[in-house]
Length: 224
Image (cartoon, rainbow, N blue to C red; front, side, top):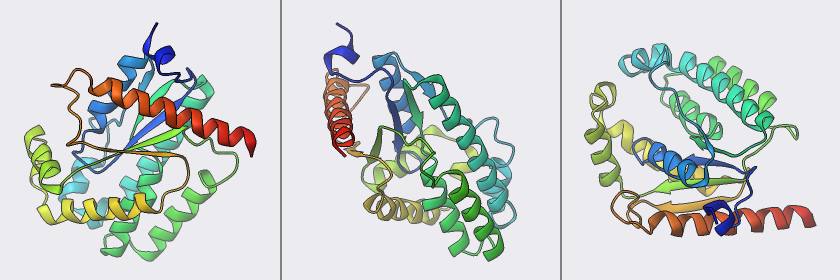
């Protein structure tokens, strides 16, 4: 019996991993995809033409970066559902508008016109009955000092040179965002409770919760 059958996780499920920078989204994405024999949808950091410039000049590149992310994530979301599901997705399209675009507008890095243009575009693309939402959003969370340590450990130059205050603000904005998120079911996982590398049974515990959440959500949907 494979793990999909063991934990009764439908093979057409789409699961999105969300959480602030450095919380372990990519690690979780790959671990779940490998266990369930699902495909991955990973954030393409290396091929992003704006990211390095953005970290050196937020005000100059915030709008460009957010439009690029919106277009790429929308295309990827469309591809996932056209394929028929069976994907684990690294970061959701909802985080872009609920956290990043809003943060840069409120901090003066995006003009009102730019922010309104971005928001209208997001709403016309995503906030419609026709946009397919994930079956489950797994929200990874943990203490700020642990997350900051992980950012420094992975050693991306553009991240290490970013002020700690930026990461701290993003951390708190994520907590506010997830408290009001309702586009799909949420499973919150504290990264200090699980260790995918050192503890063999960690993934089984998570998969059991994932199966329970998705089955319960689909049952509620079928009755509505």
